[in-house]
Amino acid sequence: MNRLFGRDKERHQLDELLHSHQPEFIAVYGRRRVGKTFLIKEHLRGSITFYASGVIDKDSATQKNAFRQALEECGAPTPRGNSWMDLFLSLKLWLKLRIEDDSPCVIFLDEVPCFDTPHSDFIAALDHFWNTWASDYDNMKLIVCGSATSWIINNLINSHGGLHNRLTATIHLRPFTLGETENYLKQRGVSWNRDSVLQLYMVMGGVPFYLSHVMSKESLPQALDRLYFQNDAPLSNEYDRLMASLFRSPEPYYKIVEVLSQHQQGITRDDISTLTGLGTGGNLTRMLTDLENSDFIRSFYTRGRGKKIRVNACLYQLTDMFTLFHLHFHQKGINDKYFWQNNINTPQINTWQGLAFEKVVMLHIEQIKEVLGINRIGVNYYAWRSKTTTPRSQIDLILDRADRLVNLCEIKYAQDQYLLSKDEMQRLRLRRQNFLIETGSKQGVLLTMITPYGLIENEQYYDIQAQLTMDDLFK
Figure 1: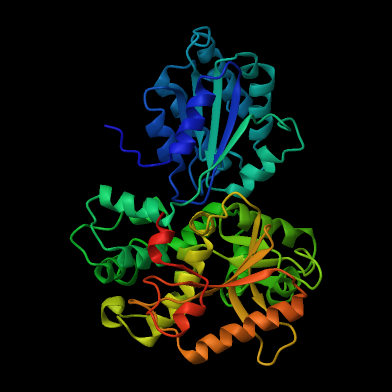
Figure 2 (figure 1 turned 30 degrees about the vertical axis):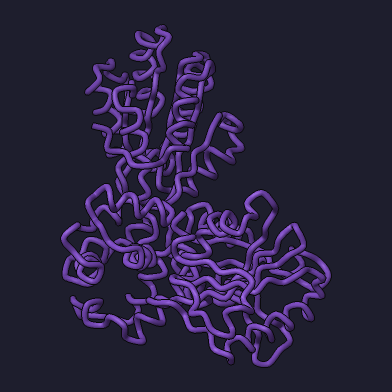
């Protein structure tokens, strides 16, 4: 039985690569627990010729032994020595007996960054194996995979050595959307309403491994307490495991992520440098790129006066839902193993839900564009904060559209229809005015509300030009 859910685009891409008439060198990457290995092994079940996996946090001898065992299991000749060149030679000699067939010859190297221990010459051996032999065969399909996204990017995608421009395809596997999360849970027998699915997404994002721990017999509060707050909870130490698996020296990444968690609207590179003490050199740029490629953060530009984008400095914003949740509650030193059940509808959780809902909305811009009918035009999106007004005017989300309209979005989380008061409406009008004056924009502005259940129909209701609800985010 095929246990793989969704991933239609990636499965189609794999099928095309598998049956192409040329050698393929494919890199699959993405954050830990997103399902990279599961995708390859399930979709290509029965088609993988050779499989070997690195061992996380182990030394060079362990990595070579894992590869050697994989060779032994498939009946490859015993390697002449213990170098990576010897190991790949053994693989080559074994594959020579099978490569002449027209059917695809699939080599799957999982957790490949683990193989590349210091001074191991793994990259040189992989380079030699591919460039001098494997790439000569049109039915050769080499798939490499790993959670250490920065390694994949730096050593394969952006390689300046022997593997420069050798990749023929990349697959960046991302977390599920809200709609995919709902369907995945239903497949597992979890029949929650959409508000509960939304609240779960605020905690876990769309990471399949985390979602797979939810039990059908549980309510949302019971699930969160069991998975995070109780003794030996499966996800209580996940943050540290996540950072260690993604980055070989995670300490500076911890600093960056924790600083970004304290600035919901995003901050500049210079601010990050100042607040973390990491300096302003190329290392900081590399680390920010690593975090963005690992789906932890996003970079964006805000609107400046007289120009559309890229006038102000680039801003960085933390977007990984589980990381946001962990840093918000872990730092409070909570020792209550029934914390979520004991604090439903308290200000502490309600405040966090309001902030988390904004991030969920930011992760579903494509769904919002589709509902607004603007999915075929260019749209830049960002939060905006005035530099001149006192107090500072702030807008949760701006959709800056190529059709010379701007959606000025107010995002509010509520567990029922939202009542927009006269005072709030007045503040929205003032923010619109401040935005137009400060940016010098000549575009039309559409006041837009994004809430789970829509607005209560009152006098202010008719001054909102566009509304989106939770159901729109699930599309």
